[in-house]
Image (cartoon, rainbow, N blue to C red; front, top):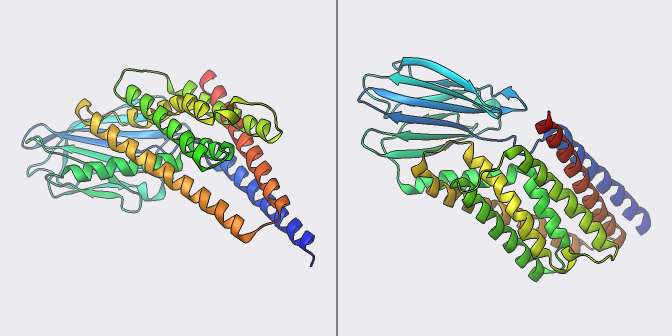
Length: 342
């Protein structure tokens, strides 16, 4: 078999793989749909606890997860539900004769989802524990106290999960990688993006900026679409600010993406005292996830160079990836605009 035929076969296989990936994103993934549930338990007396149970609405449907307390826990005040556009909030007061410390709370049905649960427990003595519960282990054993390292781990993992499952942010970072001409330009571009989204993430989470999330989500999709267009302009040799100063564009759009990151924290309804610590470690988690993604992409590029694929395949892969980014971003933009206009 000739080299040309091998290249052609590899080209078509790559094309099919990218198209399947794009279709999978369009039909099974909605960015920011993987939001965590949130359970807050505040001890108010020797036997009584206030309970807030917040579950996300996924494409308008209720999360199929039921909160189950131990058998000796009773409702002192029956659950009262309130529905918001993106979540369902249940409040109740429970009582138990010997307290919750050392007991297990289960999240029935969580194992069949891809949703995590952030659990915050505040005891009467002022001690606070914050834990991240995964579907692989859908329960939590209530501890008496936990150190700051446990809180840090919880929000770092939440930040990593948010960026790695926030496909719109990953597509934006991928577009930045395609625009950067060399490692130096990539460093300044990614740094500008990080600085910008850290600024708006902090301002929005601390309450200095308040912007409705649906328009922000639509604008984030539009920013990805615009970057895809800029990639094509650069490839065709047309003048572009993005080609000359990619970090300027990354900073401008990064301010927008930071508002999207802030939406993930705002949905948790954290007490004001927990927000600074949550903000710090959530942002660290976002950066870790972003760096992991960049490292994987650079490793793939390096492997392709070592294997010395035909130049035609490399050019085709670049073009297909750009059009795939633009196609998915277009779908998200139309979906989100029609969603909040409706």
